[in-house]
Image (cartoon, rainbow over all chains, first blue to last red; front, side):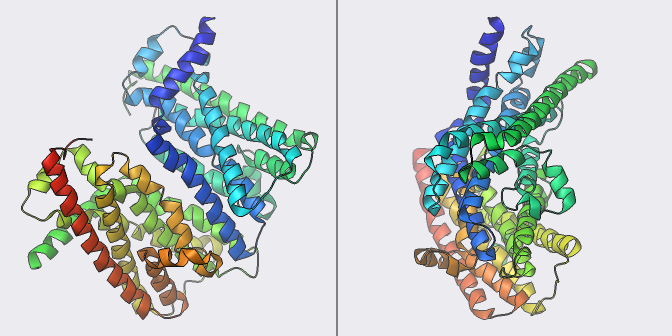
Length: 261
Length: 257
């Protein structure tokens, strides 16, 4: 019961306290307006290059933008404790680490889902891209899985944030890597072989491919393999992220370096 | 005049060095444009109807200049406030615009790193030919573009001075300006109503001057419009700063966030 309370209430409270994008003055320009313009920019570059359809860029960029709230929020809600000088209190508490840190990821996943879903709908409306009604629920599921796997990467980022100072720089670099490698704007088949190899181990790659397949009218069962792989990548990153957080916690106790970066 | 130029230049050099030491700004200026350059190269080389790779490289480079401006210039005054020096700057005998213009110009100026990194990236990894059609005009076009974009940043900084979340509002302009100023897209592809907005924005003309100097085309008109817009932005910023400075003095709200 206590663990559940820490997971749900503690997670939500930490998210609201530490994720600085939650103010409307930040949330609207950063997580509502910007993804729409990212979709428009790449759709028009696609038109200029006569490369792919608008649907390709709407789906790819809407899904990819889930990375921004997931990476930044996950980092801020964990590594942010250090900047607020509350990390010490958290780590000396007897609370279990799993509900303590994993609970913070739940609002992050939901926010990522909202941002990607909103971008998909509005970007589609602006560019006249329509999705079959039968694809809406499967699309929602794929977006949710994409947010989950991005949050897994966010946990790694958060863990590193316990050691390094420039967490926003790291988040920006990761967002850039995902933008190039995950197939949001360039199909994986068009990437050089070594890039395609890397992309299959990154979050979003399989989800974007699944979303495009579903948006074209295919059934959910036809993409269950892709969804499974996306989930697997997400869980892998989440486990690695929790291990990194644990490692740096132990290291900071050993070297008395908790608040130092 | 000499004194004003000295204040501007000293401020520019100081802030350019300061910004060059910031990991966040260096990532924004030198690394982030490589993401867009890489994507543009991969997208453009996949088809034969796309613009040239040098077109893409130059576009991504000027995107970097606007990127640093959009992410930081809007919050330039807020930054001085957080550092606790805004009151000192306002109280100094130098006019406020001469203190702030070097900051926003230096913010745009570190976009010079994006030009170097993007062109080198394109050359080394994608074999983009770096043949410049008019080298002298190219060298003149770059500072003209930087100054005009920096002064547009000054307009943003002075407009957003009363808003606490100025930098976020300013950042939200990053993608729209990239899109409507034709950095990677020919303007003819965009809806017609976008044209007047694009013409009023310095990055449109800065981009055009740099691109024409490198690839070929008329450089004189874009350069002149760039210079004209720079003067207009400076005048507008002076008026806005004068108004907001007096408003802040009247309300005693200069140091409030």
